[in-house]
Structures are given as C-alpha cells and as structure tokens.
Length: 592
Image (cartoon, rainbow, N blue to C red; front, side, top):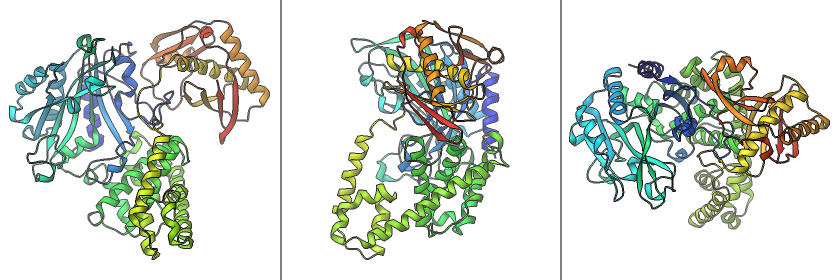
C-alpha cells in the first residue's frame, strides 16, 4: 500500500524527471492578499505567471500545496469532503500542452502508481456555440487506451476554467480554456437512482471520484464576445493527495484511508465510540480538529475576526459533534492524543513532532472548554426565557453562544419548551441571510486586488518595513500584511514596545522616501545572493532557489512577487493613524 508520504515522494520524483522545478508552497494564511483568508489552491501563487510574468524558476513547475477551503464546510461529514487538503500540481508556462500533459499524467497514474486502467474515466469539454469541443484531448485519451465509452463530454459548467467562470461571464481580455478531468470508479458502489437514471463520472451517487484536473489555458475573450487562441498556451494541473489515496486504497471513504487512520483511532480512544457507529459526527470532528491543528501551527488563534473566526467556528462544530455522540463537552477532557494523531500522521513534513502538541493542544482545549461553558449558559438562558419569546431569539442564541439550529431545537426538547419550530427556523434563516449579506465577499476566495491604490499601499509596505528596521533595529520581523483600497495594515514582531515617537519617526522616513521619487524595479536572482545582499523575507514563507527581489531605489530590498508602482512619487503621503499591540511582542500598524 502506498502511503501519503510515499505518494508525495513519487509525485516529486516524476516531475523532476521531466525537467520540472519545485515551487515551494506558500503559507495557509497568504501574505498580501486581502481578498482571501486562506490559500485554497496550488495555482493561487502561480496566477501572475499564468498571465504572462516570467517565473524565477522557469517554465516547467510543480509543487504540493497545503490548502484550506470553507466553501464546502457544510458538506464535511460525507465520505469525501474535507476542509484541509493538499493539492499536487504541475504547470507549463507556454511550453508543452495537451499531448504531453495528458500522457504524462496517465503514465503517473498507471505506471508509477499502478492504478488499474479499467477503473479510469476521462471527461473533456463538449464545446459551445462560440467555442469548439476539445476533440484534441478526446483523441489523446483514446490513443492512450481509454475507450470511447469511458470518455465523457460535458459543457462549460463542468469542463471549462476561467477566473470568471463560464465563457459568457468572462470579461474582455480574460484568458480561459477547456479542462480534462480524470475519475476513478469504485466498482463495488451501486448507483443510486435518486441521482438520475444513468450513472456517469459527474454523478453524485459516489461511484466516481475525480482525482485530477488538467486546465488548458488556450483562449482569450475578444471585445466582440468571440474568442481567439492565446499565443502562449499554459497548462495548470491539480490533483488532491487525499483523493488519489482513496483511489490507491480503493476505499470510497476518505476517513478510512491512511491519511486519517491515526486520527480516527485517537478519536475512538478518547470518546469510547466506534467509527462505524457514528460516521458523520466522527468525520466532522476528525476533519475539524485536523484543520485546527494546521491553522494554529500557522499562527492563527480563535477569535471573532477573519481567520480566527473560522478556526473558532470549526472548533465549535467539532464540540457540537462530540456532544451529539454523547461526550459531555461541559466537562474538561484531554484532546492531547487526538492532536498528536494529526501531528504523527504528517510527521516532520509540517510539524515538530516532539514539541508542537504542547503548543497547539492547549489552544484547542481552551477554546472547546469555553464553548462547553457557553453551551451551559445558553441552556440556562433558554430555560429561563418564556416560551412565547423564544421564537424571536433564534439568531441571538446562535450569535451569542455559537449554538446552531439543530442544537437549539434539541435544547428545546430536553427542556420541555413549547415552540413553533417552523416559525423559529424561519426567523433563524432570515437573520442568517441578513448576516451573510452584510459580510458578502469577506470570506470569498480569489485573486489579490491589483487596483491602483492597492499597488500604492503594497509598495508603501516595503518602505514601512525598512523604516521599522532603521528605527527599531534588526530584530524587527514581518508577521504579515493586509492591504485594501482603503488602507494598509502591517504586522510585525519587536522585542519591546515601540514608543509613539518612534512610530512618528517611521512615518516621517516613509514620507521622505516617497518625496525622493525612488524608482521601483525587480531582479530575478539566486536566493543565496538575495540573502547576501540583505533582501528582507517573510519568515513563514518558503522560497525557491531563484527568487524575485523588488528594489525601491537603494533604500529597500525585499523578496516579493509584486506588482508595485514604478516610482514612489506615485504613492502620495502616508499617515499612520493607528498603532496597537496584538500579542506577545506582536504589533500592528494601520496607515492610509
């Protein structure tokens, strides 16, 4: 049996043998991208290069990227959805295209991994009135040995990629193209007719599982709505480690594979329950605790804002599912073994196996204990509230105590409260929709805003970073930034709290450098050389052997992929309007 550790080794070795360079993964919490809370795909860092910028490592690339997505969070609990996952990817920036990509991926699946050919299906783009079907990919799959009855054609909703979605939604000048997916068939799974009369690769009955997707960036949309071929065509491939492991083990349940074995066993030991008896609840607990371990390792802590809010949300959901299977979450119980199960599963790929549990487990423990107490307080308030008033407090219980609808209704039953549950649900959904509308876009994934003002603020952070060094000394370390069209935010570490006079001095230096009209340029150079000349780096990020360094005159040198303004005179005056402490030796500057 191939473990997930062996799979990643085979993937790296395969693409290296085809002259690909490894692109180091970016952090789960991306730097300088205010439009998304988490890294959600392997191609997230590659977008500028897919759109034409030269990559420091060349035109053939691969990587394995840890990802976190909240889009499918409500689906967690079934046999295949998870919030944390790893995406294996390879890219061609204007070199090879469909023939090489599909043949190589098929070779990797059938020769390197020895997946049975008879279980593999492919899908291709069927075309639209404005775009031809992808007959080239269809013919390639046939030539590789996949018979016609296992090659399926789908429209743009299934087999087309662009940042804007289907072709008609693409703006003028936007690149896009057909994609070709590969599916693994679990032959022992019987088709469920409720999903349609005929089973096919994109059926939701569970018989098929997508294990890889090759996107071919082939077209550009013209101003008249037509499409023309791009002069340089790119390949963007992504395949989930977790799903390929499911295929390798021929298990239609992710949580029964070697990726979750230690985690599920630890959960069974802690709860005294068996996985087959409480599959849905245990899947949610295992996934959410695992994801929480990874987020905390990245420096996220539970809070009511941004990444911290998501962490708090999934920990509370894990708590509620512990409650569902009979664990008294109002009592303190140890989660050390479960956290260690996650750490041991991934070993030193991501963790310090001996020490990380001591840091991570207490944070999870404290948050879950807090929620247990909140649940108890919520039950007390519900018990003391007259039945006639409960209907209008539906969303209040959710916001104040983190209690979802089904748990609130369960409390009603346990406390013999008489409530019109339909009216209660209607009120709950009404307020939840209002809340979602108010925060629309806050948690969406996507590309960094590259508006004129954002570029100005982005460039200003380089000046700010260097000015902090000048004033506070070399122990300053960047901890992240968040840039919007309204302001910039810069987080940093310092061994002592800066004085207001020092922050004012930093602001003065930044504005002086802006007035000096310094040119902004970049060079692609070896990482060792960049370090030697003193280019500043974001310490949490791994960098390739060749890096892009941005220079602001002779003042600032920093690892960065861009983009920036061309001259500091474009930035305009910068005012630091807020300075605060955010943690132990951690500080935050807001400026505009």
